[in-house]
Length: 66
Image 1: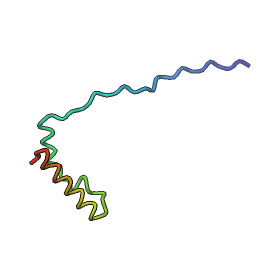
Image 2 (image 1 turned 90 degrees about the vertical axis):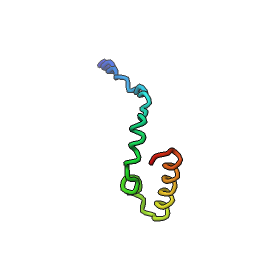
Image 3 (image 1 turned 135 degrees about the vertical axis):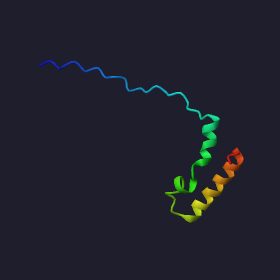
Image 4 (image 1 turned 180 degrees about the vertical axis):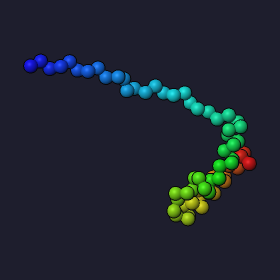
């Protein structure tokens, strides 16, 4: 018996998406995100959480988010 011809496959190569950039207003809006609730919710170790919170405060101060 003859083998059936292979079925052509669609290309699975993804095209890179253009970089997404925040507007100045969107960037400033990041200050409204409460880090204690959102970013540190899954950190169980209190010392790790405190260290990350301090780093975040320093970053916020560095970039000028108020």
